[in-house]
Length: 168
Image (cartoon, rainbow, N blue to C red; front, side, top):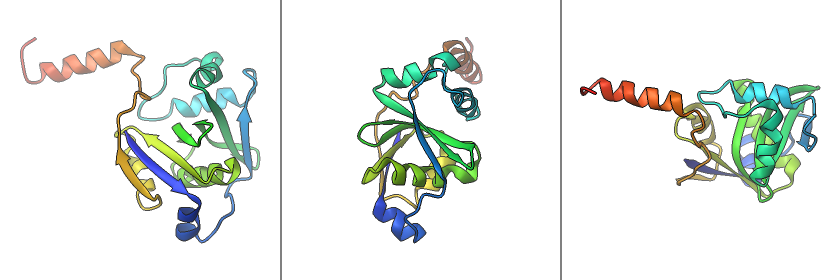
């Protein structure tokens, strides 16, 4: 995965503004919170999606010792993040592509961490492209955050690829 450090100096130097672009930031603690189904829907919009039910979404975050954070503006969901107590984000999605950096800026301001660290798998190329000019730096690392939970799809894709160049 690619690991980005986004700190308050980056925010000030790049954006000339230290304010949070979005007005709502909330750590979700109640598994019956009405925001969870909307977050679940955003989680399933991406190039890959976690194989979690709405009912298990918060429980999985808690199992990882992380918080589920909802970012809103004028009452509308802008995105979410799964973040640990040290400011490391293992999952983040915005509702609209153009809201990705404002989402992270809001999380940085409202979480009161000096920096947040965003880990992205290599196939999240749009998010990676957005972070490169904004962040302190990037490094490559190994992460299991994109654990495969839908084995059938992965096996079918692998076998299709293999069948394209050899006899099975």
